[in-house]
Length: 115
Image (cartoon, rainbow, N blue to C red; front, side):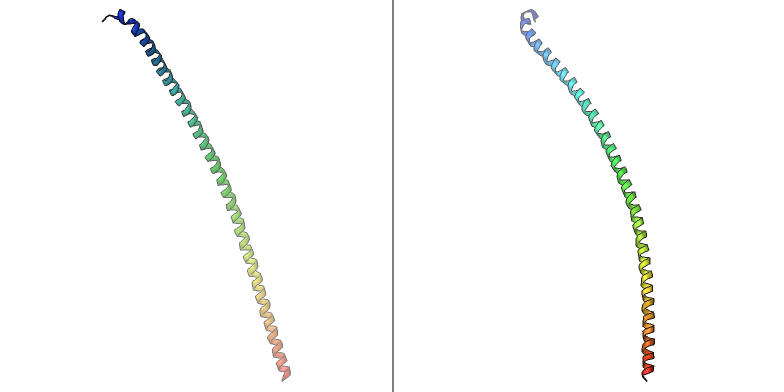
């Protein structure tokens, strides 16, 4: 095979092949670089997401603790109100019993006077 005779045909084809190889190598490097940037961004976003979730959980835990304290205070107030109501109820019953006792005494004394 005589390369001298085919040299004018191979040179233009070789130039195109060199350009194609160069483009393939260049695009492969660029793609791997872009992928690395994408992975770094993804890792950064995941870290931000974890930090946000931790902040939300911390705030949520504080709110729950605060609500539990408020609930404890409210329950104590309810118990206190129930005790006050029960005391007033017993006092009212005593007053009603005393009033009924005096009414009976008055009715009995008016019957005795009417005899």
